[in-house]
Image 1 (cartoon, rainbow, N blue to C red):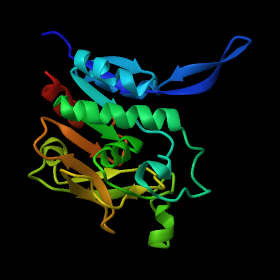
Image 2: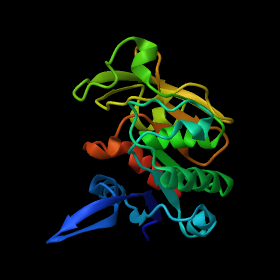
Image 3: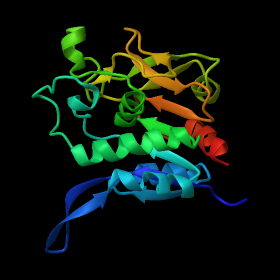
Image 4: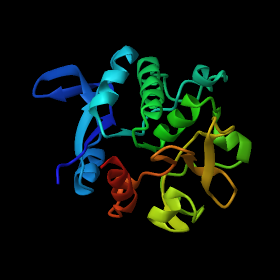
Length: 228
């Protein structure tokens, strides 16, 4: 059986090789490795002009919206928090357009970390720009702060990973208002949304944690199966 072609979003960043330092298209290898382990053929997508997204989507069987810097607040009519990462407007524009194109084409989408926020904003949702201010706690931003997530067993996410999953995924932003067609399907103990799904779509799943970093392939297996 041929491997479905899966696009993985990337970003521009300065990189060094030998004595050279140049801008490069970068993507953590964990995404490509996990796509490969699950049976897909990964392709890295540089954040070029949004006008190219329909051409990308027409040649892909699935899209991974990868993690990274926080979305700029102007993408959801919010106010930029000065503590957030420096905005990456080119990447924001490209990934929002890519998410919308994949949704229109019913191409499976797995949105991870920042990617979950991209999926939500692409559908008209909003974000909490600095989560610890809302909770009066930094527990979601702690690097080693593992916690248990409750998952809806009737969701695609729940069918893939079960009703409970223990994760360690620091994040400083979170979903505030869900976008059109999206449902919350996973929550932390404090009811912060940790997983979302796009209703009526072949596979449109977003998670706040990073399944590509572990050894559990079940979510990627379900994603690749949908892409076939």
